[in-house]
Length: 185
View: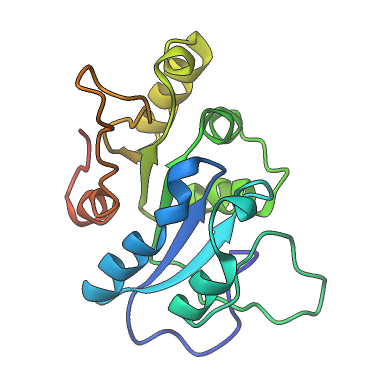
């Protein structure tokens, strides 16, 4: 990949975790913890807006690696090894639609587009409201990405249920999707 490390291969499989700008991103450390328990090393790539939705200092300390959000300059070392898998969590309406259209205007989107071309398994945990999920562009984007072999978890709306409680965002589901043969749900 254009942005992977030019260093010795990781001893453990390496997961790129792409994080978008959604309120639930504040809990991204839960996925990192779950991944490490399953023997993954993790590198985080955030959308430019996503950086403001979680504690980047704490996440960098947790992974032991810098948070990536911008392209590196030519000649700069690549801080991550090549990915063995990619998780997009939380995945927003904007990112899903841009990715399905092949738009690569950020490091996060470029990573997703390139991972597909390299045959790297990709799992997605959508965080999209009911109103945006009803948009035909979103439905078409999800269908297109699924047709490309991208593995989707259940959509999290972030909206309260009838009883007033919020549904749980199941971070570990991304790892489950990467561990399955076909990963579709």
